[in-house]
Image (tube, rainbow, N blue to C red):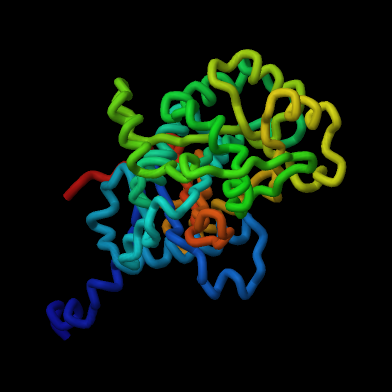
Length: 348
């Protein structure tokens, strides 16, 4: 048997299965796309973390099935977008009919992640503004006290740079808006105000006016900004030190039956919405992240050195109707630079 015959029996496409796909990547973005009406999710009634895991695994598998590893192995930033894969990215409903709420869970990222995450979701959904932004910062979810100068300040100032707070006083207490948030539940004692026509004009036209007045080049705007899991002492410190004041504080639903009296009193005093959520303390652990990656990536050069930078959840509801139109997650993973350097592959 000749050597030519031997090589003829080898399928070169099989070699791709053992190649690494993202050995040189330092950043990895996984966008689940709109997960509404995904049957494989809701048949299982998953928890929030399980929902993220299921949809990220699906996105990773779809992405891997359509790539050339010889092209992706040199990428520094990898974008796995289920919406792009299925040609269904962006919002299909008229934007002015939707209220979009974004919650950003910061794990291992500095204040710059606020701008990065918001511009990322803006690009994915094809919008330049959201109605509500909630920040969930590390170290706040277990009831620990944090201060504006010690932790919160830089993240809050980053949010201020992309927000138009003047609109907040007219929108964040509207009854219509209160009924249009799938992730939040109103605390007791809130009194709604009747919404007028001006409050329904939180639209692309309004956002365009603000952008024209901005001098820093930012193109993403959020109207109402708040926090998740700040206790009374922390919230008061932030309120006293922040230039623009937070208008929302979420607390975990495991304490909603008896919310802290000092927090309730502070929110009433400062006109802050006290809402509840049911997100886990650690929405995406390193172990779950490893399970997501190893579900389809098998080469060790693709798996080592990653950590969760941030997780963003967006939800879009049809205004005044409470119908969930759009919901999805964007997860950013960042790789330890030493791990990346160790796996550098020379280009052919």
